[in-house]
Image 1: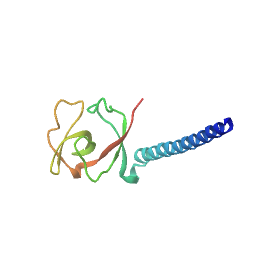
Image 2: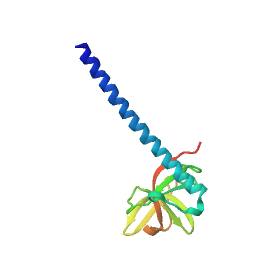
Image 3: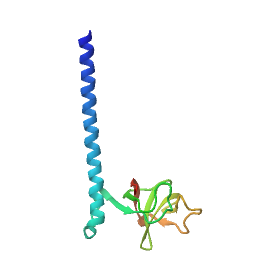
Image 4: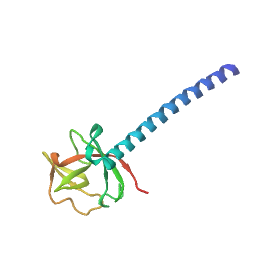
Amino acid sequence: MKITHLMSMFQEHKYYHKCRIKQNIILICSVLLVLTIIYIQFFSKEMNIKPFGIEALIVKSNSMSPIFSKNDIIIIQEQNEYKVGDIVAYNNNGEIITHRIIEKNGNEFYTKGDNNNAKDKSPICINDIKGKVIFILYSI
């Protein structure tokens, strides 16, 4: 009886160990992917490569605080469609703004910074949107 119990415990430990190894491999690969994207975006500007439609940006203001703040790095990814509640980066006369979609009217989106009192003055269209925020690297 004790041997069977010990064997069962050993097999459970072995299975747990295999799961932990898989989780660690996935974590390491994810971190390497994020670091590669950041390197490409900030140190290889002339290449203009967006693997999987992913791009890294540096936040320039505190308009989305407390979600993220100035100098944090956000990872955005192009989407086929965007919905109310998505935090998106969009082109506004050559400046990249990152705000939350608060209203959708056909192909027009109204946005607002979480830390702002009012919504943005003019709507944006889907062609202005660079991508949805999928990951945040907080500055130290």
